[in-house]
Image (cartoon, rainbow, N blue to C red; front, side, top):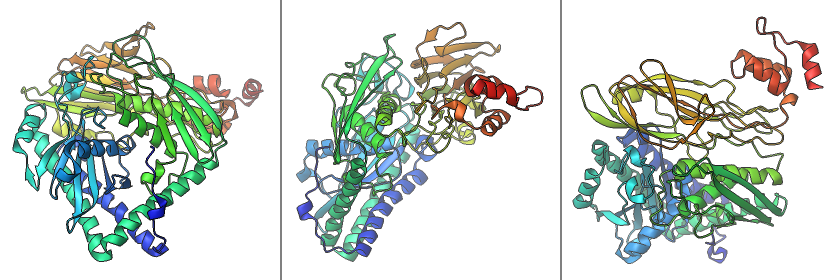
Length: 591
């Protein structure tokens, strides 16, 4: 990250009890932001799916605390805040102002992720900033939710440079009108804007209260000391990883335009208490919409590493200082105008995590896990009710996480990029003209291993009045890689079930072995048609034949794996009628 905390400015006169009190205040302020935003937002993607993030920064825009929201947002938000303050000028940002920005090339990710930045003053002294980022359901573009999968950023919606949405507490009605006019879901906009404002105000109140009670000098000293404390923890954890250079590759199935895979290459250089993450050798910028802006790439690299460093450390700038990220100019992980970026968070971030975890497997094989489903599987549908009313519906059918050295992977769990939730069926059916027909475990979807991967799911939703669907997914050519001898999972697939019951594969490999582009834009469904998505599980960990016979039998009885998989992958022979294990044949297969 290259920004370093000046340890000489950190005073040692804060006792441990005061330190913990201040740390708790900062953490609570961020958590309050998240609670306010969830409870007061209007759109279900914020209120129910929790696709948002909240954080507090010090006066130098160094991260102070963050809520347990979407990891892919959290390290990237700093870049949005820096771009906004640089563009408008620190001297022109006053108490009561709120800035916004969603420009992917100004510290953003994809256009739907809009960031709000509010300065926090105490008696005319700037003590920090509150930042709240949310995925807004629709900001225009050629497809619902911006999923046009075109070749130009303009097709993805309204790109907002750093601007003031509130000036000393007064809303910019002209800017609000522009946003409203460019959305398919204007009925959510005002409510979500007020929810973000409430979150920012909550953080401001907590920090001001701390300054009033403990004094601004103590509060600002505590900010720096907490960052130094975290950095020390992170450096100690890095120093326990063997020095060396560890490399790995992963890829996206397609950019949506070309039929070629898009390669991502990463090299981790561990030296002492520092890490260099170098993406040299990664493919050039794509025509299609999977390009990742610099802020998104750095964020994905940082959160991917934190899983295996010191995840219990206070979450602040100290997590990032020991890590340098190098992204070659002109590669698809360093998007420049007009490269489209709609899939950067949900697809590309996942591939970055997968590659980094595969590289770490060579450094710490006894700690690393099998790879996750490595995609958020984000779809957006413009749906029409039988009465002709239109709306935009979205969901994230999750896959499985990889097996670990200690246990099986988690099933049907959001990718590491986000602590998001699936849309509750009850909410979706109440708000939108759709009906959920299935959301169930997908048998044989996980990678086999001593500790198998978590399972994926089968998801079906029926359109009551028709609609158009955009879908972002991958892992349609090869499944999630295993670790330590574990096997990869199955592939993902999108299908269109017509009213006559016929099933048409529209993304992934069909029954005849033909692969179809899984990045869908405005695929049309008639009234009564059903969209089906089959997500993959996580990769397995360890030799499948070292899994206990009892665990394999339990998985068959639970319908997690089939009798055929038990024999082929695990070497366990089970009678299909009695469900008894044939010990003699099993021992022969496992010999």
